[in-house]
Image 1 (tube, rainbow, N blue to C red):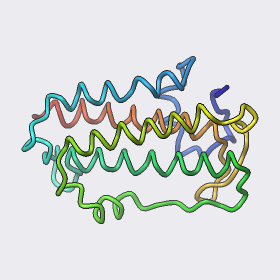
Image 2 (image 1 turned 30 degrees about the vertical axis):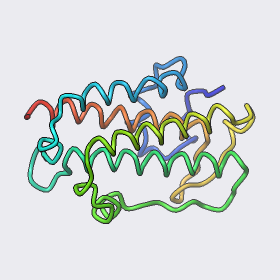
Image 3 (image 1 turned 90 degrees about the vertical axis):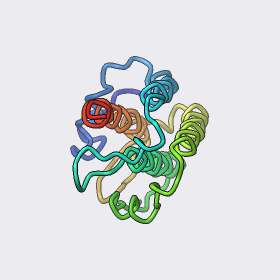
Image 4 (image 1 turned 180 degrees about the horizontal axis):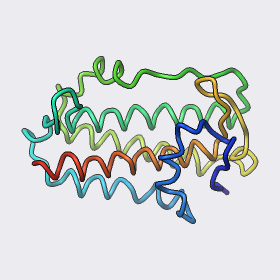
Length: 174
């Protein structure tokens, strides 16, 4: 149902994310399994360590997870709009402004993990419920053409990107 997007199906900015999951034969199954990987990584993080940033000016672990949650919501919303035939260009977003205004640092890590699972469950319900022809629909997000299928791969790849960063830059220094 979901096929690996081709060049032209999305903004080349997302190449890195899509390349992280391009070998997945069943992207929906992969999306369903990702939250367990996140929970395993964050299970080693104490409440005080959740405020750790690997260098000055970088987000804390809680802010990183909040960003992941916000981004998945936005990408899933874009997929919903385009799947339903929306042709109005969907807006971009300023990830740093969102993180600043969300005040993720005031929340418990556990609440952000619970929210992450709820968002992923909603994303899975959405993409499993779309009619097959909707996955190839093309719309416009942030001034660039994009397909529903590309958005699904971007959601998975964005999460994988941040799981890698969490392992390599955060947990490696704790």
